[in-house]
Image (tube, rainbow, N blue to C red; front, top):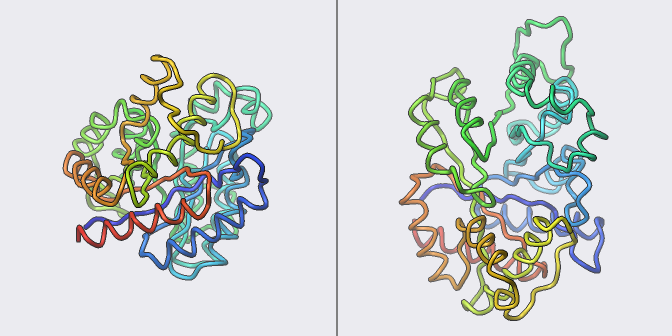
Length: 329
């Protein structure tokens, strides 16, 4: 059975705060390590009331210090927000502190609204266009013989696996051209998933880092002991997504009974489309959905995300998912 990993946005639930989110993040990472998950990734978002992982590299260090074997990384760092040298130094530092355990996934989107993006790096049009060049600059900083006069210290000569992230064909093309592993955001933007996978695999150029294509796909799992319990827990994520797309980003709301019956056809269609790569249900339901998804995509790895309001229920969801994987193996 292929590896399963964890994607965590360090959600801030209604009535809670970032400090509690960070405690929950570390607790989930420690449980995930015991349950056999392969890696634990945190995602960069800014100005979002329900997401606490803005200072992503700092939180990666916190999680890596509290675990011992699971890989920890960024899924991802939104490179247009940063100088490539700064990211090389940050992840060179993390790799020096936790050798052999750090991943760096790179995204092209700002991970925020336009006003926040300007506050981060300001020159939005140029930054988006320069993403491939920024990636090449970052790769060079990690080289043992950098071409640039400036060196990343720490960073130069360190082996930090660099992934290209994407939700469109652009990332697939870049990952293939550079011979890098590719992670697709099918957990919230599945529209071009199959086309992106096919393009990446068809045009992949082997590199010193990777001999053949490697695809990791995002997948939502809301698992509980019964289908009804899982469907109830999933309503927090559903509410949060509708709020976000309606221009009302919020903290993660508590679950709501019969939420889907209370929204209009437009909101229901939105959820059906963006959350189509999801398994919501009992262990049997989750097993069936995961098996079908892996068979359809031939994924090399799954990145499981589970935005559940109650931390205990969230742990239970990841535990069930790990048990399902073992049973399928």
